[in-house]
Image 1 (cartoon, rainbow, N blue to C red):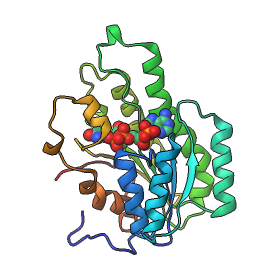
Image 2 (tube, protein in one colour):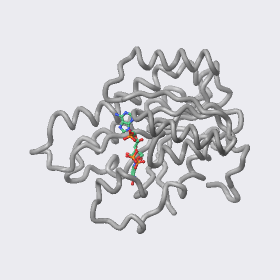
Image 3 (cartoon, rainbow, N blue to C red):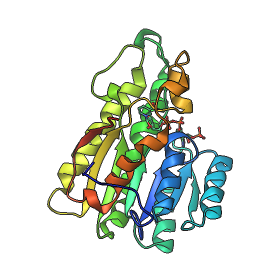
Length: 248
Ligand code: NDP
């Protein structure tokens, strides 16, 4: 982060930002933080009750009113993404950012034992959905004066690791998708594409992956927020195709 970078109520003002997996974990904190920084946030995720809670939190804090878009990325098809695009076009006329945050952890088992269903679910939620979502929303992102698309990576995206199967392969593919998009848009568009590996963070997914770990021994999602806001905000304009790793 640049020297002296700090979150303010204006860091993301006037921005319309879509967050996937906004109902829990890092996505929930990111959506709330983006709203606190002045953004209008579109909350996308599969559990309506959780999204409504985030919506209510944003409303009661007096931040810009959020929007809800319930969607299950395991089952969503092209028409669902088109419907989202049309709804956003009618309401906002543009989109200034996407945080691709929702992910499926898959199974924690050797490939010899890895089920095809779990593999396919990882690929669907972690690669195919971000592909379809980004592709559908590119025309709206093009209407922004400065748009940022941020993918959520993982250390297993860069080096496969025993028992991480479909999750690791899908995160590697997502990383590659980010690079392809960045390369295709370089010099001809105001949209930038980057990824961030948040590193070990205290969430439900982390507890599932590391059940023996003491949750208080790792950072809470709030620690990530300066980096997330920086990467979605105009201060990172001009940065594209970069894989960021969170370091405390
Ligand atoms: P959580 O499990 O806490 O939150 C994930 C969110 O994604 C939930 O809101 C969940 O919805 C949503 N989601 C999952 N599957 C779907 C689906 N099929 N359709 C729609 N929404 C879905 O995870 P984290 O906050 O820990 O993870 C956030 C991101 O960070 C992920 O991309 C993860 O891979 C990445 N990451 C996390 C690390 C960590 O240590 N926590 C480390 C490295 C990377 P619901 O609430 O309904 O289940």
